[in-house]
Length: 495
Image (cartoon, rainbow, N blue to C red; front, side, top):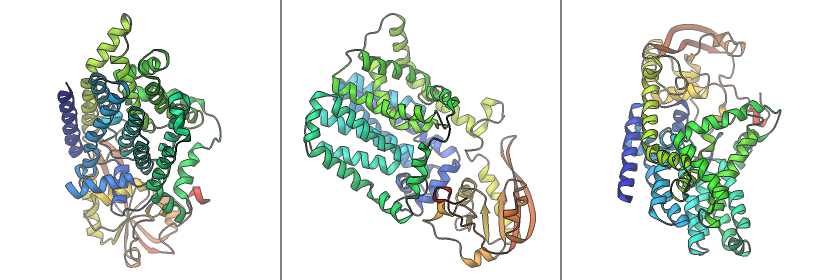
């Protein structure tokens, strides 16, 4: 049973690797790839772990879509083992452990979230090890495991600031379970906290050197300007898809069982519930005033998969509920695999929507390799010394898909590129090729920066017969002042 389950996981990893090689990068992945070329303790948007993950993959498979994604996809294997072992320790028995592992791998948040490399990918993996380390604390009673908790939480914090919520979940677990309260007067949990702080310290040092901009940017999301309750309606439908429907049903039933039925030891029930509800309730609150992206729930999914396994293996339901559980458990993995394949095929070809526009066309760089080849031909023909992008996504795609060594830069938002060397004065003084949507040069801020502007090409990015976007290429000469807009970011009082 266990070997067969791990064979299924390996099969899913191979499927994701094939999809990784076929699918062009999203603009965020290309952006994080630029980070990986200039590793630092922090970045404007996030902590550095996503850059480290990409760097390791590209050292193995090169600067290709597969290379960018390779190590992230391979992290499925230690993540799967961690959730298997954690479930076995918390609830006993291999059947529930195998179920939790397979149900986690059936989710779209894992299949897509570990293939499309964002900070959520290493966060998912670290979250699984946080649960495993806490399960070891509960199972062994040995204080030294708190150091492992600290390492896991520290790595989660190096991935994304959402990991701060693990502290609240752990505190709830310690206070709510009588047998755990002894740890509150023990030195070990505090040593674990110091360990987490030490692992996270490069981010603190980087932010201290950069006016705390990353913290200000991300923590500023919690600011409430006005309530917009409409966003709350998006939460359940998006998580229904990201969890995949069958896993979502099982996980919801499992959370109910953990709260209302004798399904495992109190310590295990409280730990799994706290790891889900602390983050879920915060984002439900956040949705009352701002949109919550579906992937932000990523760190709850290891615990949610354990809850789903509890519903599937530890509770005897009645009648229709039991038949529902059995059906969901049997079909969750194949349905998840089919959904993943369908999404990859759609994103790359548009076949399933009849080649019409869908939600993937803007973020995934389908057609960009071909577009980049046309841009490079124009650059060589015009003698442009540097290519400018109007936003970080376009700029990052250009950096990835244009020939290695091509000068590419974003004119504004220079804080995003603060860890990278800037183009030389000679490159910026030559002819500059702007790649942007039509009409950008009508903006006085752009046109007033250059004394001569000439449109040199109209291009399109396409997915099959679908035109995703029109692209205008303008040759810019004679800068009237500083080429770059060095305004401070809004977080630091800029415009």
